[in-house]
Image (cartoon, rainbow, N blue to C red):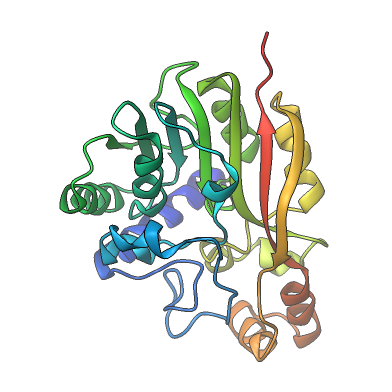
Length: 272
């Protein structure tokens, strides 16, 4: 599949999600799909205090993990969220950076940006802004961020190396990247890679875990390590769903279900 074809499909699909107020990567209706999504382990780490002041619509974007709990965000810092969706992680981070800090969410879908801005206004957050743009070409200057976070989004990019290069560019020396994402333990069937629907549903674009970590290191990050890892899918009944939806054998569907992981990764931009 061509990169622009993938971007177009992802943008169209997440536009529909925003318009219909659906959630992504949870057990709610599938990302841009029809019917129910596979049974997926909900991310942990969102405390009641984190969520109590967040509008209900923002909570639709629960992703596949919670990079914020590992980020040690401090007051006065600048945080950038890649693929900010409905704005959940941005709103939580904004409370941590305080009045002297700043949070910038970037998303390529105008409808998502609009929803996120509404959510921030309703919650009364003044230190958050949302910018329209691609995570491969961030609308942010060099060396401005203390922390870059992302939650179940980079797997959707057809140019992941570029994403990590951009994250490195906008981080200050000594800044850190904390990303939660979906990866494979083993290479999936070719049909999964060629299926646009699988790509939009955070599966087709997921790469091998070691390749993911290698890309982060290649971008220049040091001390790269996996802070959290778990199986992404509860395998009860999902094999038949994958087999039918992606037109693969039951055996291959089982391999996909067993191989998908949710990981949270840390990396440090070194001082010059």
